[in-house]
Image 1: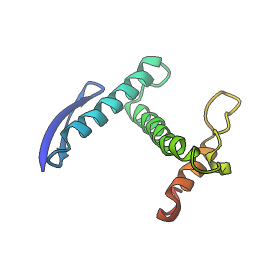
Image 2: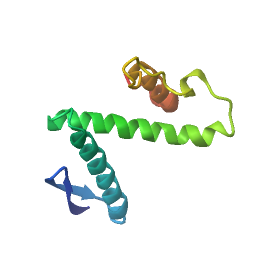
Image 3: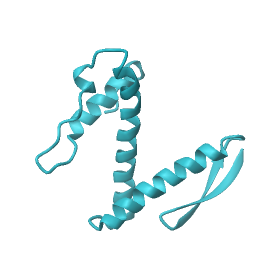
Image 4: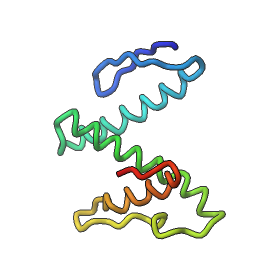
Length: 112
């Protein structure tokens, strides 16, 4: 296994990477760094751990959306595939998001 040094939000990490997976890992690092930087730069969240959790949720949400886009053309939408309900504050309803992820996992088990 190869080791790659990567920087996320100004902090350096040494990551293990299978041979041939360097470009995918570096793309993932870039996506995480971009997401975390955007949250930090918005100025509302300062703690690194909270920034990481919010970035992980944002990226998981984007990932969950991808298969739905492809599947929408071939199959009717289920209630869990409909756009998540917005909260009054303009955020995403986490219960709806968890339900959507559970729907995608299907036989793999429930997220929570």
